Image (tube, rainbow, N blue to C red; front, side):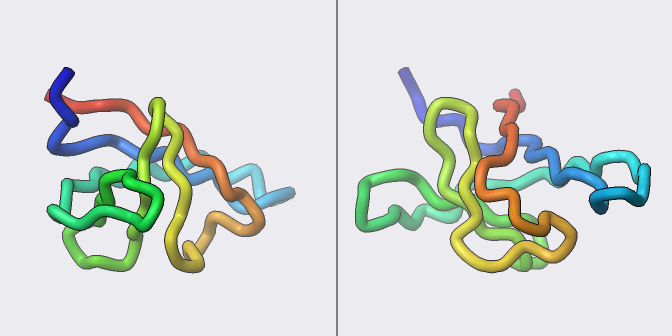
Length: 77
């Protein structure tokens, strides 16, 4: 199976703020983590994640994601 080129990653709203989640589109960077997972980033490069089995794990602190270390990722065509 081919690795998707882009994903939609859902960032949760602020706890207790009742804000809706934010969806960010990330694209493959051509980089790989030391563990062999592809690295994806948003257009600005502020959100960098590794994605395995439709779970995005932030590689850096994610503004607005708080303590969430597993984010839902949906492959896009």
